Length: 313
Image (cartoon, rainbow, N blue to C red; front, side):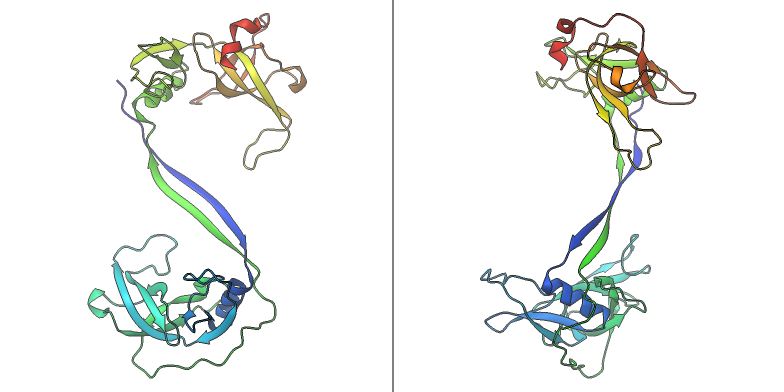
């Protein structure tokens, strides 16, 4: 049995969101080195501000400035900062209740070590040199032993408000396809396609999943299928995908390989897009060094009869 494969995988995309009046004022204030909260009807000041009272669900929008100094309410030491975190050297994650606020703000504290951090210690904001209207305009907090600083009395009205933000979202992890799909991928590198047969219903599934999706029982018997197959259904792609060097329009199809009881998908080439049809017989086209077929092309055989693939639509 081949070794189970694994490889690093990154899922990344830019998350774009618009801001309401409260969040817009908060982030614009950070750009101008002003920290704003919002006051509830019972007199509490929430920092960071929210648009609805978390207790009563009442809409709130009475902005109030708080001081850039505050008190650590709790903390945790981060001994190995990761990519994208506020500091590149070890630091503490802290919840800081700024002077004038009734809730705490989460951010990083620049400290020489965990022995220098304690609940109740006084800190102040360290502003970023370049500010754009984001939470990163606060570079971090730093220890502070001076007098509490006072708000400037800002009303929360700014020119050129920040109305939206783009936050990159990224997930790095190691993916393993498991035993069944590792065998499938290994066979593809040898220009073979293998599935697994269910011991109960006897259907052959490609790509294999390690268990029958119908019966729910484990599968282990490998069956080589194809290489030829039948187009069961297809779509015409008219929008060019980013970072995909394929000219549009092109056809993406479900292909039932001979001997398989589940259709897989692949691109159809070697034929005008408007001549692709259900029942078209196709075969894989490999490129040198590829680990999977580049596309499928017509074999020249007569089209398959509908009854031979209707159950695979």
